[in-house]
Amino acid sequence: MKIIDGHCHIGQGVAYSQTADELLGEMDRHGVSASVIVPADRFIAVYNTEGNNEVLSAAKDHPDRFIPFATANPWYGDKALDELRRAFDLGAKGLKLHPPVQGFQITDEIVFPLVELAVERGKPIYFHTGTPICCTPFQLTELAMRYPEGTFIMGHAAYADFWNDVTASVSCVPNIYIETSQHLASFVRTLIEQVGSERIIYGSDSPLTSMALEIEKITRYVESPEALESIFSGTIERILGGDA
Amino acid sequence: MRAIEMHCHFGSWGGDRNPEDTPERTLELLARQGVDGALIAPLAGLFSSCVDHRPENDEIFRYCGRAPGRLFAAFAVNPLMGETALDEIRRCRDEHSARVLKLHPWLQGFSVTSPEMDAVAALCQEFGIAILFHDGTPPYTNPLQIARLCRDFPALTVIAGHAGLGDLWREAMLAAQRYRNFILCLCGPREAAMREIVNSVPPEQICVGSDFFVSDKDDAVIWFRWASFRSVEMPVETRRIIEVETGMKMVNG
Image (cartoon, rainbow over all chains, first blue to last red; front, side):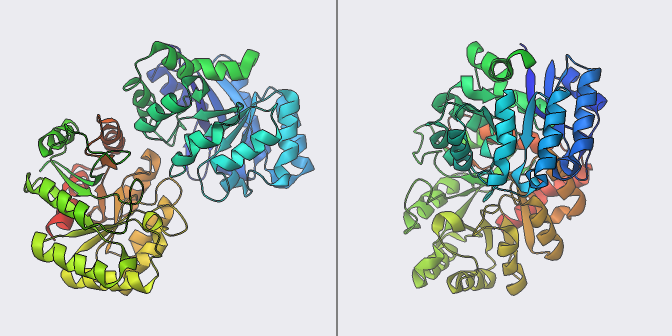
């Protein structure tokens, strides 16, 4: 079975670190053919250019294994736009935003220019979700309704206690997909039943979690080959189109 | 006792009892994870009213009474019920030798800084009853909000039932470092976070839970949480204290 990991970090962060080679080792041990890679914590918060360069460089070295997503802190305004434009030009396949680390709410106006640029370039936008106040499922729905032509990924399926909003929030918009890292095995099954596997993306959030467990929590309880194919590769490949 | 599960619930996700649910089945589900005992708590509020907890309390005491020494009942009260809540604490202690009270401030709709909470905490301190809290979700269950009970009731044992969950585990860790009577139940933080907690907090202040429901149709929750915890490397003695000793102290008083 083909496995694409929808969310991994590389870089020497403050709270966590992982090199490209370490991630490749993890992927090889667990049969993961490719991974979406995003920068680590401090590179998401402030050192956006350095973080983006690292993921772009890793993807350049391993074009078949890494799918780079860039980040830009919306508070940098025009500089953030310039940085995102530069990263897209150099091969970034998507935008990653992290409201609690970057200090904004999903529906804040400062986010709109970055979203508009990603939409214009046809790139998916991954949001960390689940942290109260700044990145709730219904905030993401509001943004997805504002930009119906955009493609949004609900990172971590709103772990922990916004699980109860996920289905209700995505039911009225077709352009939000749900990434599974961090969440319980039982909730993945619930999402399949309520939302459909064609909207679910496997992700591990490595190195913050065990990639082995993040895979097994799905394979252990999901029997349908079609559902497994969607979750492990089909959905993300469809979103990325030729960029997968 | 190989290990004790310190955060599971009566009934099933959705509230209904599974007709196949028996103490024997629960022990079998636990055994599959290498766990020999469990603290079982009510979860009123999410799927049912949280005004009168007494019927469910009695049901859980009866259920656990069928597996003495293996299954341990936690009971619930709503602090906003005032003297009724205090009477239920007295009753559970007198009739069932209760050792652990379960509270869920956001589901039950009370503030941990309320005078009603103080009255409950004072009585639990007097009786030697530990309080297991849901924690990790604002506005009523931030770890430091809950931990202030450790400051004001220094002989009370307070268990953060989720060790801060995914967003507030660092806050929970700080609270545990400040208050020796603040216990972290690893039931929510993932591997990297658990590693840091285990390296920063004495094992006597750490236990493990899964949040599984004893009537669940399978082991999806309990398997995942215990596999996650056991993937974290630590010295054998540290693991033994966390998996067994801390929890047994809570349920035995």
